[in-house]
Image (cartoon, rainbow, N blue to C red; front, side):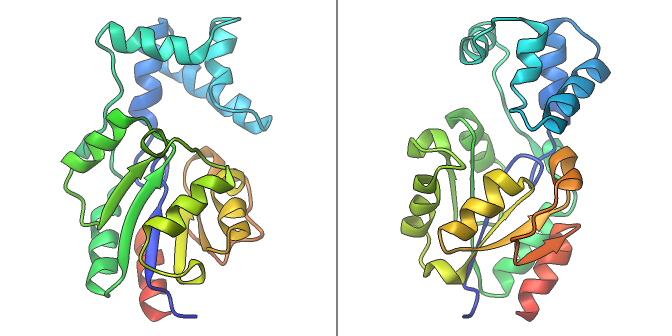
Length: 210
């Protein structure tokens, strides 16, 4: 079946989490390298990265902590410096090859607004907060199927996280490309991925041939 659409995850697929965790380190009053080490440690144990915050603040309710940051003017945002260098060239190449290109990940509404301000060469941007469903729920991928003008088997979902991105996308009937990027993408293999790539430009060239 021909590929007609490509939908991208956000964190560690299009954007680096470097500044995100550096901001948390500043908020919590610890060195950035300590924050990074804790995040890596919880991910290696198969836990959600929010556990790193709970290690630093035992008993902390992470959503409440997010709200406290926002109330203090430390809201989450994304800008051009957060994009990986291959993002714009790859998205442009996919658009020029005639594919529908979308972005959909587990982000809040502010991140969605930030992504739209970047004017990426895409046809649509959505976040889990806007949809009211989040990965790895099957409902998230059902929303993608409803959103994208293509059949499930004609849609490729691209992400770094095998459990959150690749496996549920394949279970929903989508094709899936695993990006070896970031601490999860580089350390966990996605055996059920249709393709595994080391960059988005590699993926764009591959899908152009498909």
